[in-house]
Amino acid sequence: MQDSTLNETEIIHGRHLKLFKDTDAIATRVREIGQTLTRTHRGRRPIVIGLMQGAFIFTADLVRTIKLPCVVDFWRLSSYGNRTTSSQSVKEIMSPMVPLCDQHVILVEDVVDSGRTLTYVREQLIGYQPKSVTIVTLVKVAGSPIEVDHAGFISNGEFIVGYGLDIAQELRELPALYYLERTDLADS
Image 1 (cartoon, rainbow, N blue to C red):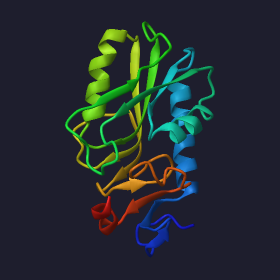
Image 2: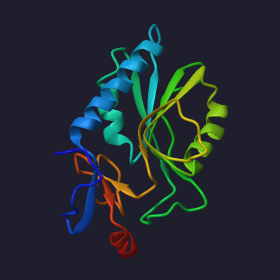
Image 3: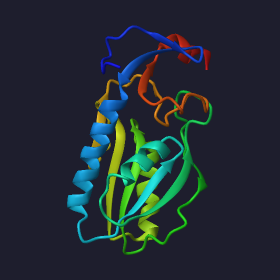
Image 4: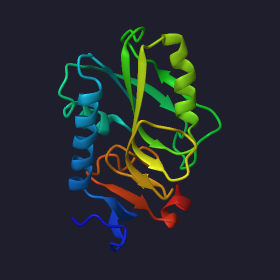
């Protein structure tokens, strides 16, 4: 599967999709980020917090590439629900269960665009008092005002599905990242 946004549109599960990043490109980039986190967190036992639900596959693959003992937990938040645009608020469904005070935290996000979710998480983290916070995202939208420490890929802002990212709870299971064609966005 070639990694190109110039590929023809594919119809998968009734949706019109265009390949953004193939499985090889994803695996390579996840491995690179994992190697960097291994170097920057050497001598530490980081707590990796996956922001659910979109980052669950990325989080699982990433922790397997971090060559350090680490603790994994999840923070389940929602700002999209079943829509394709973010709401004006973030709803916390499940907070992390492990203590974060005086710990080195690696936050794993799926997509950083408006930054509403990460802004909420950063505000909430103040109360947890971690020693350090490293922010990793699978995809950062070009022009996003939010700073992250590590971004897997830069996107042009089109809606992305696959590899954990969804549209109305569908298409998370796809192994690659795809742009969803605008005609399918109007239907959701």
